[in-house]
Image (cartoon, rainbow, N blue to C red; front, side, top):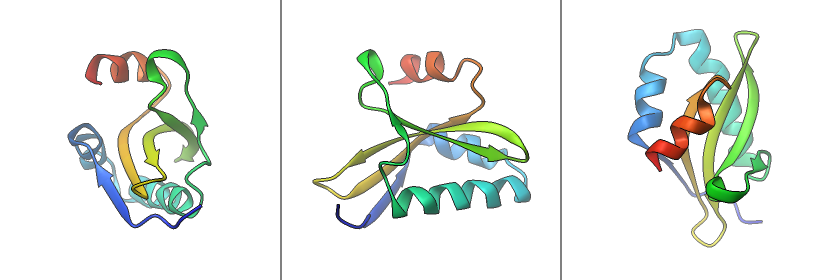
Length: 96
């Protein structure tokens, strides 16, 4: 597995990050650094969301989902969505 050379953010992800407090951003940064080290950390989804991988992590002691796409050929990590489990998958289906 090659090292990640590029990390992209979708507008949806940027908007979600903008609303976070500083301590929440630190937790998110740790999760993203973990994904850069091992992009296969998250779970690959099936069916309509087969393009998506989801990494679960704790942000301020609350379970949070980070949706991303990883392409080995391009060595790119694309951060797509961030949020709690409630309506997470429904919202992603409506956007992508």
